[in-house]
Length: 141
Image (cartoon, rainbow, N blue to C red; front, side, top):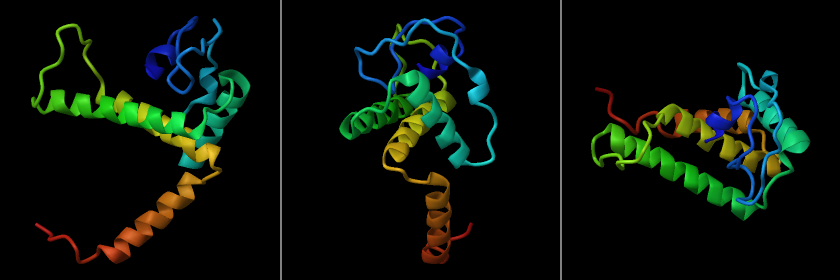
């Protein structure tokens, strides 16, 4: 859904980072805000800038959590279809797992921004922790 709205020059629709009744004005979305980044912090800054200038502000925390769970469900649905565990619904348009994962990451970034968490730093800390804690945990094949 986010992908469809971002790639439409003129749009008016619902955006998943906002309450269901929030309508995005019919504007041109500035794609120059979103480009290739060297780290997650830059993505966090771009999302924050967009939400604060164009998006109408952050949702309450529990609404953002609900958005994360909704996006996770969409990722699960796509994996079920790809792995042929569940067939797609007859009216379902061909999905894109990568875009569903991107929606999930954006929802997580919104929550991190709300709580002023530097995800780049936290990811680095977590990877260091895993390398030490789990270095002998898994069998190498």
